[in-house]
Structures are given as C-alpha cells and as structure tokens.
Length: 192
Image (cartoon, rainbow, N blue to C red; front, side, top):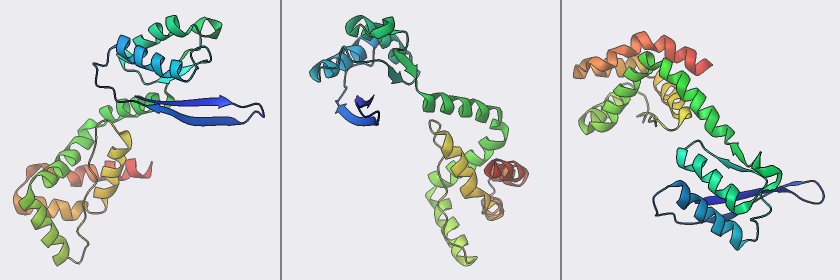
C-alpha cells in the first residue's frame, strides 16, 4: 500500500510527500485496508489530521472508508473524507466509451495479439519489414486496464496497416483483413 500526503503549508503553498509504502500480502478486504492505513497514519501522528482520502472505486476501498471514519473521526463528520480518484473516474469513462467501439477495435487488438504470440509470424514480419525498407515495428500492446494503451495500439498500427494486411494475407490470417475497413475508424480515433 502506498500513501501520499497533500497539504497546504503556513505560506499557502501546496505540499506533497510520499509517506509510506508497505507490503500488503493480506486479502484486500475493507477491514485489512483500513487497519493498515490506520497503522501508517498513527505511526506519523496523522489520524486526527486527515480531511479527505482519495481511492479508486474498488469496493473494498470504498467500504474501508467507513472503517477509517470510525477510527480517525475526521472533521465535518467525514462528509468530505472519501474523494473519488478523478483519474480513475476518467479511466472508467474512457473504457466505457471504448466498449461501444469494440466492433472496430477488437479485430486490430486481436491481430496485434496474434503477431506478438506467434514467434514465426513475428520473424516473418521482421523479414518483410527489412525487404520493404521499413524498420521492424514492434506494435504497442493493448492493456485493458490502461485506456491510453488502446490509443497507442491504434497509433502504432495505423501507419503500417497495409503492410500488416499484406502479411496477414501471406499467412492466411482472416483477422488482419479488418485493418482495411477499420483503418478509417483508427485514423479518426488517433486524430481525436
């Protein structure tokens, strides 16, 4: 568990310090999360000085807030004690939007996954790039928990889409054919 503290000093300057990083091998239950966090806050004498805590929306994190309110007794009755992480909310919104574009993204994602997971295809790709005077492109991988990885995937594949499509035909890989129809979508997404 990592804890970062933010506060305003006497000169009204925002301060930020990394407070603690603890190995957390226990099950991630609300009780375990709140207990470890309380121990860390107690160690630094901060239990009565917390105004708000920012967590992502994992249910155990959200439930641990109730436990921490009982232990820390924050000001204003804990009304502002739990502030949802803005970055996490943005990530959820973008991922929700990307789900609605799944028809266009999935074939490209599948194609690049195929390329990454088949060493023979990867070797052939390298030879193909060399024969055509291109650098051997290693495409970005799409990581479901990182919304910007979809953008990087589309950006990295777009400039090579015709070559990847040609390679797919060479290997008789049906999934790559989608590049031609989805290329227009990819171009629009990347420009956005």
